[in-house]
Image (cartoon, rainbow, N blue to C red; front, side, top):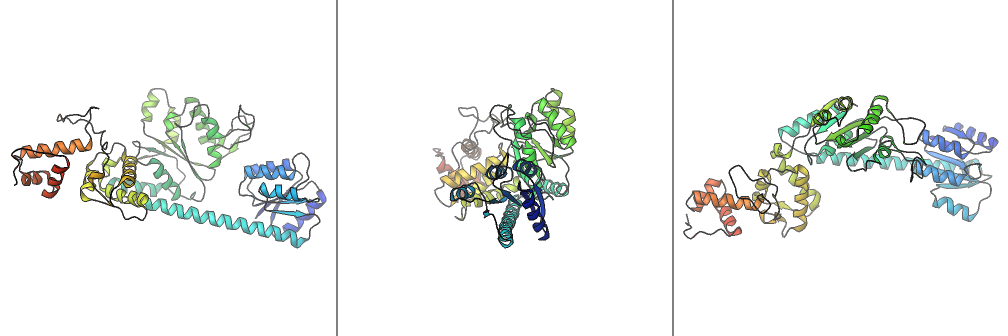
Amino acid sequence: MQILLADDDQSLRRVIQFKLKKQGYHVVAVEDGVQAIDRLKANRYDLLLADIKMPRVDGLELLEESKRIQPDLKVILITAHATINQAVRAVKLGAFDYLTKPFEDDELFGAINKALAFRQLEVENKALKSQLARQRHVDQVVGISKPFKALMSLVDKIAGTDVTLLLTGESGTGKEIIARTVHYKSLRAEKEFIAVNCAAIPRELIESELFGHVKGAFTGAVRDKKGKFELADGGTLLLDEIGELSIDLQAKLLRVIQERVVEPVGAEKLREVDVRLISATNIDLKERIRAGRFREDLYYRLNVIPISIPNLRERKADIPILVKEFLRKFGKKEGITVSPDLLAALTEYHWPGNIRELENLIERMVILRQTDELGLEDLPTDFGEAIAQSAAGLPSGPNGHLTFHESEKKLIVDALNSCGWNRTRAAKYLNIPRHVLIYRIKKYSIYENQLSEG
């Protein structure tokens, strides 16, 4: 266990350090709060043992600052003049315990052992939650289609390495999900996974978000702030929509990749980082290079292992499995199912919004459902509005496109016309049961004067 001891009383500091080392603890001792803050910024500790009365930065100020630097750190304060108000303030600021001089060895060791035991429980609890979250995530990445199996085979091959990845694919295909899967299957799984959408952060803030800043670097920088690279240290950082970075920021990113250091805005010193970098984009970066909007040297640094994420149109066999997973997610334990007709319609749809569109649709249908079996009647009326007018010259709606229901009605009418309005023959023509066709005819109020009973 790593203990940081801060006390301006050299004699007491040496005595406490000696006694703690005899107990088997690794102790770093400093003489004031300023030195302690520098140590906290440079290294991780399990416990801070600090005197309240110190020059420059006192114990209470140190306590407050330590919680910003290392929020999980346990802090025990020492004072020669304890007061109720001082104790209350210390507890409110996050102190674990409070010792009054002079104290016995048993009192000191008891407080330290209790704090470190509590710290260990927190670490184990966090690790257990992380393990459960990883397992839940991996369990949710499902599919049986050939493109999906090929993708996961590649993920399994590269997950255990630190190689830089570039994920490409249409919007909504699940690039962040795949990046998280790589992280959770890697040796970095116990550390942080942080995702940044480069297009969602204002241009003037993106450098600070990625690399951090120091207090006073610009208006509004009231304290030091770690950037995403430092927060992901030891773990994985996903830079989504990487193609939206400005050219000048691309140069700084290239330096981070090459030298494994970041330079916070306004800082004089570089900070080392150990991060696995994954980038993602739904645009053609080579086109950006030709247009002078993306650095070619950065592209080759990012594109060490390219991974193309298949769209949902290529994963038709996975749609029933994904539907079941989203029903479990949004329906909880309510036992919601889908009718065969609806599942067939969902499987045939071309999904321009990919998995995200399917997930949003299932969530919407679950919320607005009338029964616990979702059917075609539960489809939103605007479902499929993005279906483009086909080359066959299908009539278009007011926005120039057909909705899903308009397409289905047109298909049924065309089949009935082709079969002389004989429902039995039309059902065979459409490869659907006759009762399903009759249901559709009623649903869409399709009538014909000489409709045959077949």
